[in-house]
Image (tube, rainbow, N blue to C red; front, side):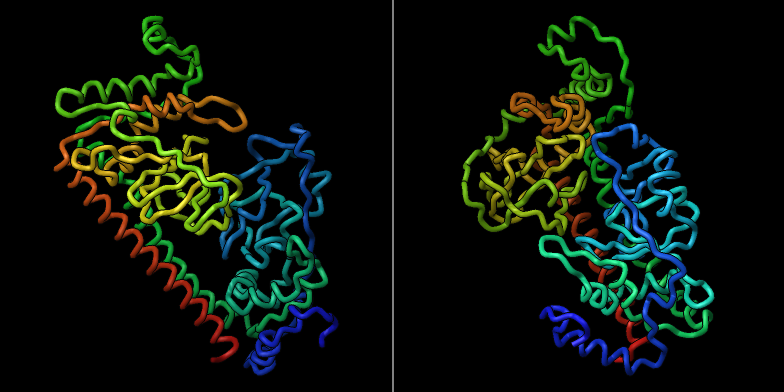
Length: 446
């Protein structure tokens, strides 16, 4: 036993991995031998808004560090005073290596000048590497490969939330070619594999991102231009017709979307949502299989994610071909046509087509994700911290409904794009997994 008596730390899998490291063709120093310094950050008090900023100093969290990349996803910012005071020790510099140390333990990435100025919270660690011994990018690739992740997770501690401390990080073994040139050769192969993966993922995203424009082009409907104005004039007649005193309800973007639909009404039907679907509210108190929460649905695409969110409390039942339409934060545009029976969060409306001979559920889901619908929902929200659509507003959404033959042609093209996108994404991920296995084999052998 190596210093700890818990069963996880002494699992036979780690004995086998250490044997591979012992037999590696390259030295395997501890990570602590490669460090010049190590530091973690902190999180300023959420209740003190003066510590945060709208832009400037990036404040990186776990979701911003993933598999060799620093992501701008939901980026937060802190003030110069916090960066230079409370978090001075964790200021980032070019070539710093970052690693997640709680929850999703072991994901690593390297900081570059384009990410700066930046700082980190307490769930990340900043490692400043001796660059005469190791390329920071090489360390990140090792930590992100299967064997590196296993080693990181061997040292976790904590009951409710897994975590790594500094001493544990320093103990991680790193199979390290002694020459920087040899490290660079391995990195060049991984860089090429990453570029190939990213190109396929970009192509997959492009196929899905273009669906809204394709649907509207097929219907010959011009979407409204994006408009972020907060001040605009409203005709009193429109207020009388609309029956609402919510100013955003009359935002030019929403009004232009409704006008575009009205202009198209001479060649296709324009219906309120409640005229063509029923709102299913069959509840269960004990969640069943195939649970879907908001986190399981991608914005704008309707594809499923690999979210680990689990059911909490009452759920709605849904059936295959029902359309799930999110009423919470409608600007996220989360709409999903069910491909199986299951249950979902009550933050979804479960829509069931009344007449399948006149309305395709595949078409309905695609239409609900278009910009002429999004322009309506974005400006119909109520509530500040948890903006939602009221039931009446959802029921009154206006949607274009062409002949069923046109719907089926649109739905077929949408399905083709989704299938091609999934194929590209699968190829991208399998190719990247194989690249990681190759990298590992170069260091540890078969």
